[in-house]
Image (cartoon, rainbow, N blue to C red; front, side, top):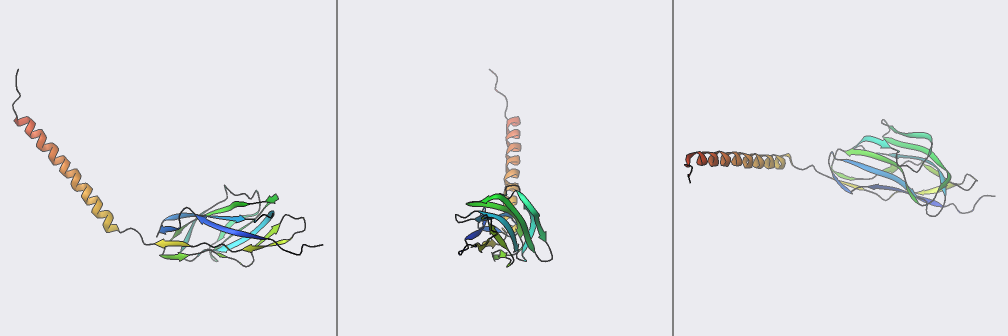
Length: 182
């Protein structure tokens, strides 16, 4: 006997902020919201946009405690994949993997979930659950101008020079003023 309705889980992607600068590192938290159903096996793969450079994969805070295949990155295919499970299943919203990336170009980006990605319900029947794709995009803006930083450095340099000149003037004035005797 097989269940007639297959439950869905929502794959989630979140970042500390939704807008970053070119070259800035951002940690993307890949997670799942089980929508009230226990899910225990994850076989997920997603493609990073060409403009992303992988910095690291971090499973330290993952709810997955049995890794069938450690999270890995296939540089040629630009694909991050993970295969793992949780005895007894997961219920609710949780993080599966953190992916730290740097973005090399301005634009709006999303992660693409591979069609072979799958999840399985903790129902004892090996029922494959439906994955609802993440609704996530990351806005990448241009870098702060180097000229603007240079102007601030020059202003700070002039301020320091002005303080030095003032100190020298005060020191000379002090030397030129005769000491008063009582």
